[in-house]
Amino acid sequence: LSGGIVRALANMSNATIVDQKVVTGCLDEISRALMQADVSMDLLKIKVLLNRSQNISFHFLLQRYTGKPSFTPEKGKPSVIMFVGLQGSGKTTSCIKYAYYHKKKGFKPAIVCADTFRAGAFDQLKQGATKAMIPFFGSYEESDPVKVALEGVETFKKENFDLIIVDTSGRHQQEASLFEEMRQLAEATKPDLVIFVMDSSIGQSAFDQAQAFNRSVSVGAVIITKTEGAAKGGGALSAVAATKSPVIFLGTGERMDDFEIFDVKPFVSRLLGIGDWSGFLEKIHDVVPMDHQSELLQKVSKGKFTLRTMQEQYQSMLNMGPMNQVLSMLPGSGDKLMPKGGEKERQSKIKVYMSIMDSMTNEELDSTNPKIMNDTSRIMRVARGSGRQPKDVMDLLAEYKRVAKVWGMVKGFKTCKKGLNAQH
Ligand code: GDP
Ligand code: MG
Image (cartoon, rainbow, N blue to C red; front, side, top):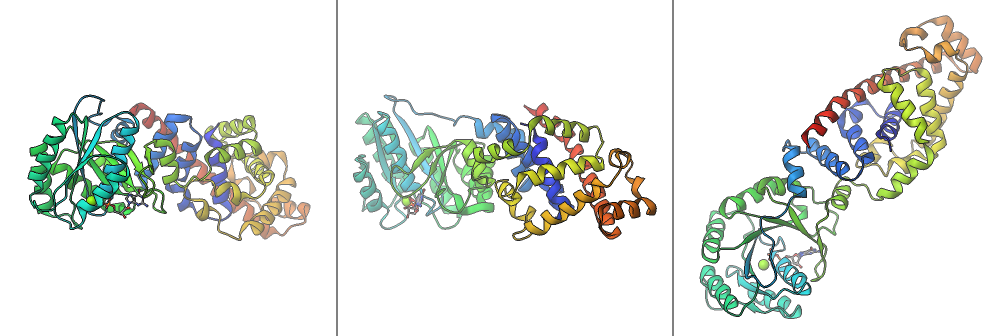
């Protein structure tokens, strides 16, 4: 599929309703990304996200997202996995989910409760672990988390458990004492992997938070929790960047099997708000013939955005039917592109424009000189011929200039794409 399809859509909408700003934003790139095949599609999307949020190197991120954690446990080989994260991020829940997941794969997991900070922490773990039938270790009396952790890890190692999970405490905020505790715990238990657990809703603070943990213990993987809610988990990108580690699992609920292996594609499409990916592609495919699109794109890329090009665009648009339905499937910007309720006026305006263009000569339609219509006699003739007002003709011409300008900018994105390809 050609990226031009969506770009065309976006630009047309831009032309009749929204101002240029929308387009100068990321819309073109998002649209283009939508149309790329598989891997490059995800990568482009990530690039879009980055443009939107912060300037983390795209190339770097792509490696992380698609990379492997610093360690992957193997059956029969004892390994220690330590979970870190702020209080309430979902560590304890994720420890149990992680243990349960691996148990189903044939591992022999056990969990150590090194959270001596929060009252009730051990009880919570006990309850969850019992339900999942995972052996656990903890203490009601001992207040030194390092002692408990060490005893637990050693006990389970002796008993030949191959996946020893250490649940740690958190604080509500990032505190020096917390990070010192994590450092000591890591020093004592020597984890093969430290997993940073992050609540999907934390958003902007994700980078700092992840970085702070990563400084005291070397994080090797990320788990994002509560992804089933409204929050899309955009902060995950930041956590990935801060820890230089991939996301490995997503928490999707409170139950122990609400746990999914991280897959970049659905995650990013969700981030970008594309609800129905394949539905979107199909819809585009149905209404805009591909050949025609590439022809259109070629014309545009050669700098020939004529009135006829616009006429063709309008025609595909009318063929498409309710535009907001299509555009609502576009990432993020659907609402901005297509304010609710504007559909009817837009359609009728487009019909007016179409009738005006019907009264133009081939010379006028095919001219690459936008000034050709700066001529009162031509304007009057076309207005008369189409039964419209001269003002309508002027509106159309203003619109044409605006769209042509936007196309000029779209052409500019080409260089951008080249640069991107060179990166991978
Ligand atoms: P901790 O303080 O980091 O150990 O966090 P907990 O594991 O105790 O989790 C805090 C709360 O978040 C609990 O009520 C969990 O049930 C809930 N929780 C954890 N993970 C998820 C998730 O993926 N989805 C939902 N909906 N709730 C979660
Ligand atoms: Mg906990």
